[in-house]
Length: 197
View 1: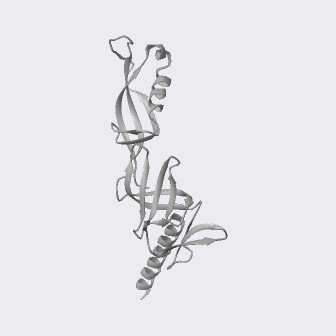
View 2: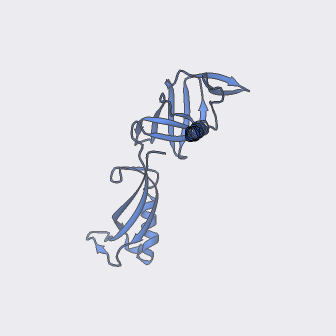
View 3: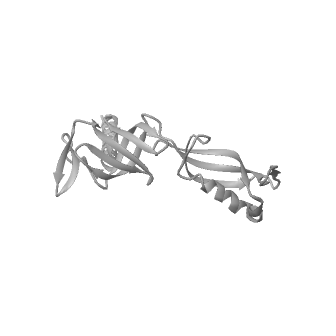
């Protein structure tokens, strides 16, 4: 999935003196307060981190509450989907006008009817709302399906994605992977036939 990146950073984390007994725990608590929020400094949503304390020394800040700064090296997992990148999520609701998706368990995405390929037709199957491809009957989008969609825009404040199913490489992840495997096998078989001939 695009939009995820692993980056290394050197950070200066400020800790209250009352937390100096266990610096690592205090550092993790400070960084945990940034989880699942968009941060301009990181240019993304912090999903996970791994830290190591770089030095044993600390820089004390003057003031009413004399915090001290600890230098750490951190590996950060960030989520920042750019326009035209592909993300995957689970369909949670379908209506004739929209498909609602949860990406990575925390970010909501919506694909509106103008951004759904014409080959997908809205149907009711066994009492369930779904979109079925008119050219490939097994390509079905229903609640619970893992969906690959193209990012149109990403609102950092509410972590909302506006998505699109217009490109051919979007749709049900399972169906798309099966199609790519079949195409790979056909290419191999064709390559073997050429070698024999």
